[in-house]
Image (tube, rainbow, N blue to C red):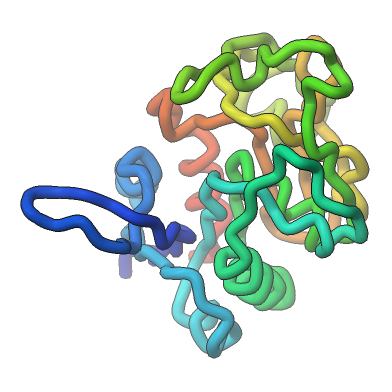
Length: 228
């Protein structure tokens, strides 16, 4: 049986053909990379209903990128630049909690990595330019930044990406405290780029967007971690 990997999705206003309406959507890169990794992608609309039952039907989970997480989830007031999607927060946190309880392999991408940290008791920096004094991780609307990242020796991230890698980024927030997760990757300005869960079969978060770079490696690692 081909493994089923759930990909969390957005509900956003969308236009195509003659239609202008709200739609459940996710960038195609996630779907392509899950397929390239040898699994079958399943799109998960935001919903907190029956999360445990949903997770029982999946073999792996990808937490996709997107809008900021509501700061109340980590005990902080909202920064003026913070733009949230409460429906995604509630639905994805429920699915993620069920996935962690079931020891399901999980890959978090950008927002997905930040959600992993928040779910594991961590906190976020809400606006990196306030800390770094620049916008290199999100240069302008729709334009990815590029920078080197380094990975901890012996980590899962190093096994997948090597000791260093050039990565693409599009985020104005970042993990500040990783909570129960272990930090295993950093940008050259020390922004956290990768986290892992030391007590789970496979829980990896990356702050950049491998799906846009057509980098199948983290998706293939997720699929390899699914029990045969």
